[in-house]
Image (cartoon, rainbow, N blue to C red; front, side):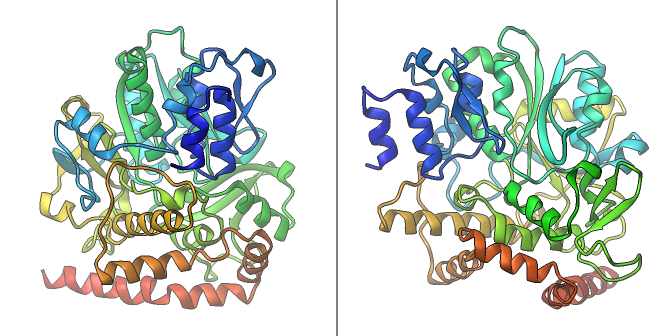
Amino acid sequence: MTDIHKCVMQQNKKSINCIEEIVAQRLCHRCGSCAGICPKGVIGLDDDYYPRGEKGVGECTDCGLCVRVCPGISFSFPGFSRRIFGREVRAEDTRGIFLKAFLAYSADPAIRRNSTSGGISTRLPLWMLETGRVSGAFTVISDPGHPWKPRAVIARKPEEILRGAYSKYPACSMNHLFSEIRNERGPFVFTGIPCQVHGLRKMEETNKSIGDRIALVIGLFCHSCLEHQAIKDMMSIYRIDERMLGEVCYRFGKLPGYVRAVTRSGQEVYLPYPQLPPGKYRPNAKEVLTFFFKFYSPPRCRMCIDALSEFADISVGDAWIKGWQASDRLREGHNLVIARTERGLKMLEEARDAGAIVLDPFDRELMMTSHEPMATMKRLRAFHNIARAKRRGRPHPDYGFEKSFTMQERTRAAMNAATYFAADIPRLRRFLFYILLSRPGRYLIGFSFFRRRVVVALMEKLKLKMK
């Protein structure tokens, strides 16, 4: 039994103290479920979205709801797959259970053009709001006071949904917003990353009225969140005054895009290496985020096994599909959309029939090979880290099943986990970050991604021409 479970069982320890223990043991996702379910409102969030006791913490009634809905300590994949899909998912099923898959995009050219990929996660909630199917949508916008920082809001107007069009990678709480709509009937459309969806599903199980107010759950693909310190360190290294920023876009332009900031005066600054003139080599957004994650991936993200939001009604992400990466058609803006439940499939088909979105059926067999190695490696790395935590007697999440490793998988997982060696050593990671963000550092980055950017893309193009 871990210290976390002992904490929960201690009758003389308040529930809020157990939540603080979960945070201290680095098992908190920062999903906000504990704050959203608390009937007394004694759980708030700090600047990094970790839960904390608010004033009046003495009002905690020890109902235990905050601990029961926490997906950081446990989330039963077999149990919730039986409840939602009627059958169990296996540890090897990294794509999850689904009915159909599509390549899709918004039929509104402006939304498609101004979104990260195909704009489905923007257009679908917008259409549901415009047609009266929902009274609001959970979405993430840029914090007006800190443009680099994501902030979750309930969007009640079309323009508010449009503000959430671009991807935001730093960690963000979402489920605390349920306390805001506690007295509203809704319904609402929920869009979130896997851990937030897990928290929502546990909240629904605990309080049926929460599930009754959600018309649709849209899950986003997720490799990992970023610690806020990553952006703070980058701004410090480049001496960027946060007060001068007007907007930060982590995926500007189509696949794969670039990280771009816009100052309040309208000047565009591409990151990293803002000193470089246009036309010079710089890493694209996918490459930048790859090495950002190596240094600034939160500990709990490295023990998460869900890459494709397996418990949403609809899962949406980039169309990173083997055999398609070099396709010019995808660069026009497409999403890979996975319909997992009948409710999700019905909503997609209604939106298509209404002319809001375009759906192109995607082959099921090809779907089963999509997002490789991201989905598989995320799961292997997580189970590797969980096994290591068990051996050392440290707290770890419980997913209701375990992964049996082949020797090859064990080696791959250990090697991948080792690349995160600096993530838990702040001084070391900042030093290495400084080196990579220096002028010579861009050549190291370029060399690291040369094969992926040039050789792999060339091979994919040749394969497409031969078909």
